[in-house]
Every structure is written in C-alpha cells, then in structure tokens.
Amino acid sequence: MKQKILMFICAIPWVLYSINVFTQTTHINGPAGSGVFGGRITVLTNGNYVVVDSLYDEDAVLNVGAVYLYNGSTHSLISILKGSTAEDQVGGNGELRY
Image (tube, rainbow, N blue to C red; front, side):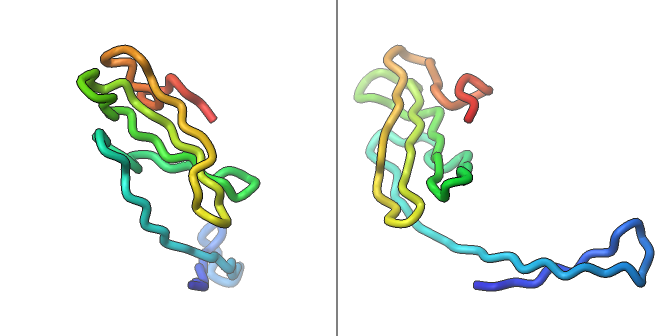
C-alpha cells in the first residue's frame, strides 16, 4: 500500500513536502508459550526484522523471554535467542539492544 504524507516544516504553509511511504502487514503467529509475541518489532536496514516476546515461557520455566529474527522477504525464521532462567525476560527492559 502506498501512502502520501504531507507535512508543514516550521509552520510555514508554503513549505510543503510530499513523502512516499510504503506499508506492509504480515501476520505471524507466536509459538506455544508466547506471552507478548510482537510486543516490540524492529525492522533492520537489510529488511529483516526482529520480534520480541520478553514474557515467553519455556515449558514450566516462566518469563525466560525470546527474540526472533525473521527474513524480511520470505518471513521465515532465521534465528531465536531465548533466556534459560525464570524471569530472564530476554528482549525486555533494554537487555537486548539491536
């Protein structure tokens, strides 16, 4: 979908810029144990994207957290980083910066 965004710069009405923005929606189901899958999503400069689920549960271990790296073209999963101890909350509160 292509959208046009019009904006005024410095509140001067005759300085008007037009910016083309492309948007895309992709639905990915979180895995079993997801708490807040997709609570934070970051698109990387290469088009891949990172999906955070800081409250992911690994079986009976609660809130270990997980961060998923997806291919931006195919939307296939590239890699997963998971915590190992209860309340690790990987991806939450700035523990993982990307």
